[in-house]
Length: 219
Image: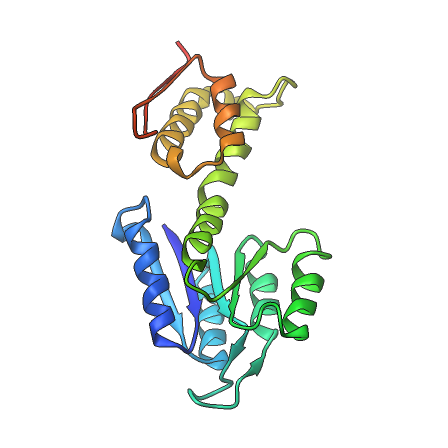
């Protein structure tokens, strides 16, 4: 289950993001939950509820400029939501979308301070234009699918001996099977550098004419 929160006061933007995620998502509908909020106050309610219920958001997509309590309120840069996500869900990906990415010094300063200088706070920022949706989806897929695959690939195929516990050793075959399933499912969403690592780890990596992975085997 992937859980995503979209915080945006423009209905057309919310619809575009939701449709893009649902249409190009390699998950069944029941495995993807998308919540939406219009104001900063409403978004904090969603975040607090998810924290209390121990159902963390994997991704939070924020507009930089949002109404405070009611739609139509004076809209200004609000950093409290980003801080709340980083505090409550440190493993989540924060995606900022804005019409003022290049022109607003507050936006640039926030990105530098929170997502460049502070290591460990995962974030990306995009201007709301005709081409931002593919980039948004690519960032989300990279966070949810590619990074876990890369981490498991390193652990299972590292040249450095790994310290597996007794239970892990017994389940090694299951771990390899799960990794293979994830690679097969998300192959087309992986970057070329990760695909090359996979080719080095497995003996047979076969793709069809469309680039879809059809065979992955160590034997």
